Amino acid sequence: PDPGGPPVIYRAAGELPDGPDEAAVHHARGTVASADVARLAKALGIPGTPRSEGTSWVVGDDDGPGALLKVTKQAPGTWTFARTTPPKPCESGMMCANGASEPGGDPVSEKAAKAAAVPVLKATGQDDAALNAGQLMGDVRVVNADPKIDGLPTYGWSTGVQVGPDGEVTGGSGHLKALEKGAVYPAVGADEALKQLNAASRGKGDADRDIGGCATPVPLEGEPKPSDPQCVPSNGK
Image (cartoon, rainbow, N blue to C red; front, side, top):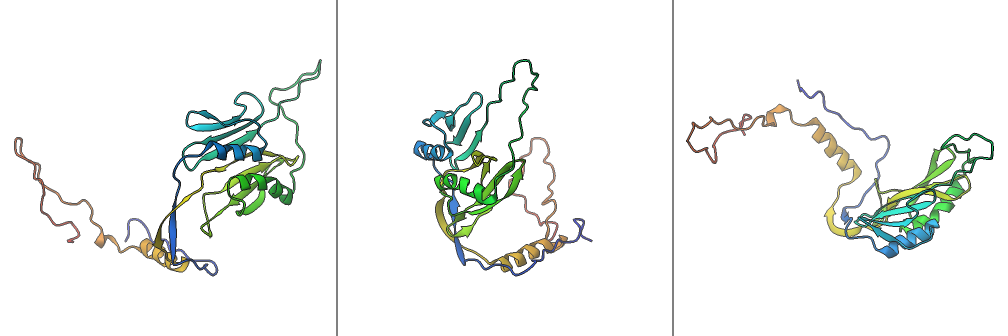
């Protein structure tokens, strides 16, 4: 029996999509320009000029409540944005809990959230991305954008834009540096990829595995160690 257990076999639920016969590799290279950061800051409604702080571009207020945008200078230019609201001062004679916040209201509709996210997505070059606004974080609705690269859908390259109950963008994250197209390689379709995945999962048993390699005697003290021991692996191949 296989000590690793039986092989895992994957089956597709439904018809698999067609794919191209070849596709290009895309690389995250270079650095993010100050002008690109300024364009994103403008779309987010943050006044000010990008300033350099170590390995990042920064726009906004580092200290206290306000809006803050940070973008790493090196590709892929990961950016994060957060907008905070100053707490309301306590009325005279009233006791207030530290850090308490009042409920903001009901989340905006998916249509309104997508409309609020459009300027941000346009500034990041992802205005043609597929949008999903079904995620909620309390009264904040999140618009997740998955862009297409070279006409193909992507995974793990999404932008998230958080929209508050007043329709204002309150947070977000993504990548600002556009990917560069590289070499083109042959590609297999989803059906063939599934077949290859299952073939690799089934394996060929322990007969083709070389466990342990070659065993050689330990040289006596003062004798040179063999530089290229000649032996046959345990599986005979």
